[in-house]
Image (cartoon, rainbow, N blue to C red; front, side, top):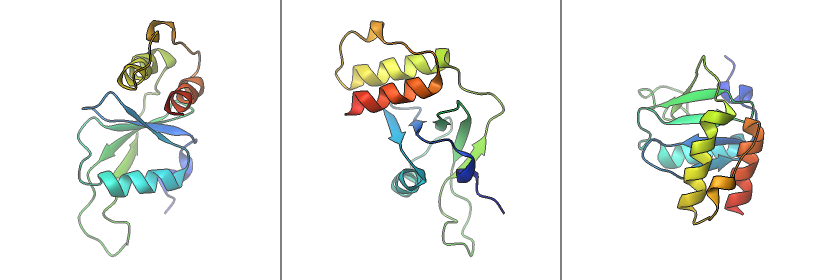
Length: 123
């Protein structure tokens, strides 16, 4: 069975419902690290958005199986893409949480540019 992780266009971000900070993921390895770290902390509404705007709902790990990755959170593709207009408040809140000023001037025209802006804010 094909892994959903192969469908994700990197870089990507994770938006947690109870945080203004966005988690930047550069590669599948970053997802695996975050998934292990947060495996029991993900909540309803947490999502991963890739640089093409595809959103994936993050849900609790499945019950124990024979697979060594059975306890990783599940990613479910959503039928609606994330638009730059929807991403903008996330990026502004992230910038504010990071102590950036002049967030009113932040803008971008693609989701990929928005994720690149998150990368630059985190540098």
